[in-house]
Image (spheres, rainbow, N blue to C red):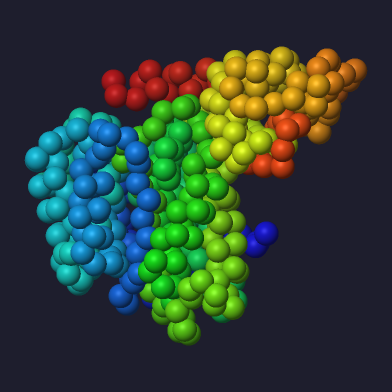
Length: 398
C-alpha cells in the first residue's frame, strides 16, 4: 500500500492552484470559508462519478452536460446550500456560478464544473457568491483553504497525497453526515500531474471509488449532491498512462490507496463519532455478497450503538449476517471482534468480555466475518452512533 502523506492536498501535484473565500453562505466564524475554486494551469483529462439519487442536485446535470462535450480543468464549490431540488432556477444559478468562477480563473466557462453542498431545497445566494468571487486568490499552496471551504458539519478538513513513479496524486473530500454513497462520495476532488488517457482514467477512477467511497457509511443516507472528480493535467510530463503502460498498475494502486485513506477519514469524522469501525467480510460466494454485507453491517444502528458503548454484544453482528440474505455456511461462519474470535461452528466461543470491552474503547474497532462459502472479500468503514449524532441533526436546519 502506498504511503499517504496527510499533509498533502489538491494542489500538491504540479500545475494546480486553488483558493477560497467567505461569502456568508455558512454562519460566520473566525477563519471560516465557504466558496472555493480549484483550477489546472494546463488542459486536463477528467473523470467523474455521481450520485444515483433520482432527485439529484443541479450540479449533477450541469457537470454531466459539460463533460459530455469536453474535459474540464476546474471546479467551483460552495458549502452551506446544496442547490438540490431547486428546479430551473437551480440550473441557471449553477451555470452562472461556474461562469463567474471561470472568468475569475481565466478559463472558458465550459471547462469549469460546479459542486454545491449543504441544505437541500434552498436557492444559491448568488449576490453573496458573486460578491465574494473576486477575493479568491488562486495559488499553488491553496489546497488547505480549498479543503476547509468545502466543509459543512465536518469537524476538520480531509486531505492527502501519494506519490507513484515521478508523479503525485492529491485529494480533498468533505463529508460527515448523510453518508452512504450509492456511487461515489459526498464530495471528493482528486488531482494528478500524471498524463493519463481519458478512457483509462474513467475506468480506474470508477473502480477506485467503488472500492473506497462506495464502502463507507455514517448513517445510511445518500446525498443528492454526491460527486467525485479526478483531474489529470500531465504537468509532470511523460507518455500518457493507459492499459499496458509500465506505470498503469502503480497509478491504479496509488489512486485506490488515496481514495481509501480519504474514505476512512470521512468515517472517522462521522457526525458525533468517537470510533472508526472497519468491517471485513471474507469467504463470500461473490464480491457482491461481501460488499452487501459490509454495507448492512455499517448501517446497523444496534451494532453502531454497541460499539459506542464498548459492549461486546457480538449477537448484533450475527443478526445482521443472518438477515442479510447472502450465501453462507452456518457451520463455517466465524466472527471476530477486535481480533477476538467470538463465534464459530454455529456457537459462541469462550472469551474475556472485560478485556474485549476494553479493546473496543480504542479509536479503531475491527469487525471480521467469514461466511465460509467462497473466496470473495470486501472491506468497508463506518463509525459508532452517539447521542451527539442526534443532537447535530436535530439542530441542523433550525
